[in-house]
Length: 68
Ligand SMILES: [Cu+2]
Image (cartoon, rainbow, N blue to C red):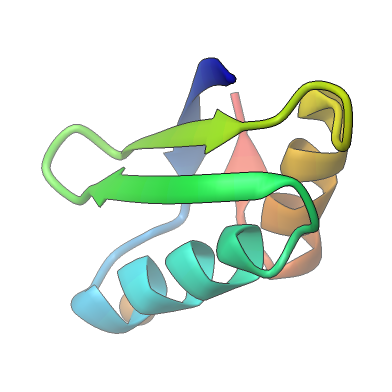
């Protein structure tokens, strides 16, 4: 398992948090997603044999948010 932290821009309410969490959680190979609204950090546990960090970034940007 790998852990990656993403700084996400554009989350401004709890609904955004839910959207980011479910979008990233739907990526195959992602095991756990923690979204911290205050720090705007998204911590993702994933299986590096199944998914790469770039695909997680893509899921966040596809949902309408940007990753720094
Ligand atoms: Cu929102």
